[in-house]
Structures are given as structure tokens and as C-alpha cells.
Amino acid sequence: MSTGHRSPDGPGPGVDDAIRALLLLMPRMVGRVKRIPVPEELQSMALGPRHLSLLSYLLFDGPMTVNELASRLEIAPTTVSLMVGELSRKGILDRREDDDDRRRRIVSIAEAKRPVIDDWLARGAVAWRRALDPLTPGQRQMFLDTLRAYERAVEEQG
Image (cartoon, rainbow, N blue to C red; front, side, top):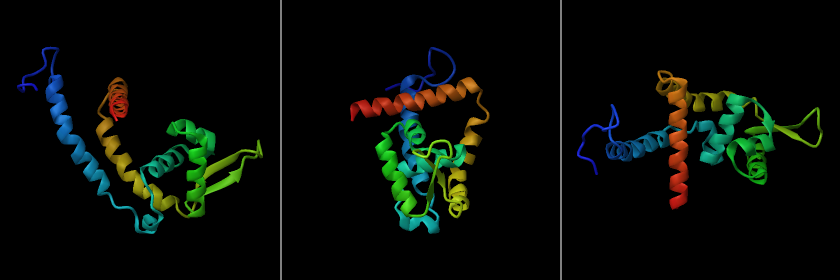
């Protein structure tokens, strides 16, 4: 690994120093995120990370079809359909017919659960806004691209 010197390519740490910093930072971040308490009203519902992503899309982007959710979550529509069914039975999501195409179902967060889900997910959104706001759009894109590249690399190794 690196000796702690700056990168010869410009300001900032070298690759090895950045890796070291991330290897220390990532477990702390994950630990802090895991300690965000699930609201008491939702604790019995066994919500996992996959549910949080689905709920986040519905909260921030509004109601959408199962196929739209599947595309955004990058998983099969059948998997999303199962998740939607599960969360609908628990009263977290509502499904209604699409007025334009009765074969399609529109999925949304149940109005009774919206405030608690909004409050719960807003904490992460506020933290991300604080972290990303000072960056330029190009820097934000680079950050997102880097996280996606890391995710792919970990997936390839697993």
C-alpha cells in the first residue's frame, strides 16, 4: 500500500490511500445506517434493504407500475410483484387499476403509512443532500459512477 504521499496525478490522495480511507469509512457508514431505527409502527413488518429502495422510489417519484419499479430497481418484474404483494398485505402499499389500461396496476405508498415512511427515509435524504449539495453536477455524477463501479466490482468477485 501507499506511504501516505499525495498522488502524482494532482491534489488528493493516491489510489492506495483512498482505498485505505474507504476501507475504514465504509464499515462505519454502514454501521451508522443500520443503527437508524425503524419506526415503531413498521418494526413488525420485517422491512429489508430491498423494501427501502422500492419505498424510496415511490416516495420521491410518486406512484408507478410494477414494470417501472422493476426497471428502476434493476430486478425482475416478478420479484417486484411479489414485494408489492407482500407490502400491500401489510398495508404499506396500495395497488389500483390504471385508468388508461385496466390490465396495469399502479403502486403507491398507502396514505396512512406515508408520514411515517417519509419521516424515516427523509433522514437519509437530508444527509445525502448535505453531502452532495456542495458538489458540481459533474462531481455528483462521478461520485455516483464510482459507487456503481464499486458495486459491480464487488458483485464480480462474489
